[in-house]
Length: 391
Image: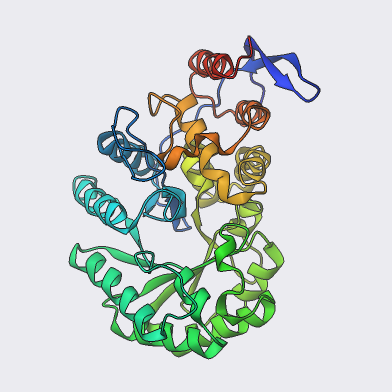
């Protein structure tokens, strides 16, 4: 698809230099006219309140109106919202009380939007990780959060537990926890296996640092509790591991890709199946994701790849190591596109990426056709550069 160049901006490059970059007109995407053939959750970010008197490293200050407005933006593109997940800085600025309030407000907003769907993160993050914790306390923590989400009428995404990682003595401990929790939930849940590249504190989840052995443990848990498991979200950034696990799932249990590196081909799938989606990158590329999923629903695979192909380099850049800092890029792009009036993150995480990283993100977003208002994006990029002392 040819896009005309419309303005230029000087951006920093390696070697402490500036180069002229020419920005093109954005791509045009239509709102979905038919249901998707894939379930698609966008893990949504939170918008910080820049005028709060709270200290950003100590307390979460959220602009609730702007945060909920962003959920409405995602729903308008036909996407479901995965709420209070790691994209919402869960465990990196957002604690459990703030996350529960976020869930409450999002579920309330969803009632006014026909077809709006929400998955709500429930974990154990109000329990500090400690090797001396007993498994019973981890179970109780999961029970407390699951009960709170169910009381609000929310559907559970069962998040990985730092506390369980810290105190589990064997893979059997994981089985004990998940078996107990899953037998009590009212509706089938999505289990979230978040890899150590997203959260180093989760290294060795399911009782082994060998992902193949960990997968065996996880699959055993799912097989024993298949009637209480809607699906498994796998975030290991390894398509071969995801495909191997997908092919071993019990009938009726979905694979939700969390692979922000290889999502396009995993969602398309192969002759033996496909992955649905629960992705942080869908927060940033909602119009393109929606357009691509509409093309896939129409069996126009050429259009599907034409739309998503340029978003993959963008996603790989946003999620590059240290991957846990990807939230900075997600919020940066939301700011460039006018969804919020500032580039400030909960916890002060706007400082987690350097200016060169953000300049390359600007280029890749333009190449994907995702700078909705190029003039605004350029003004804001220049504003950011000025705060870094770059004329």
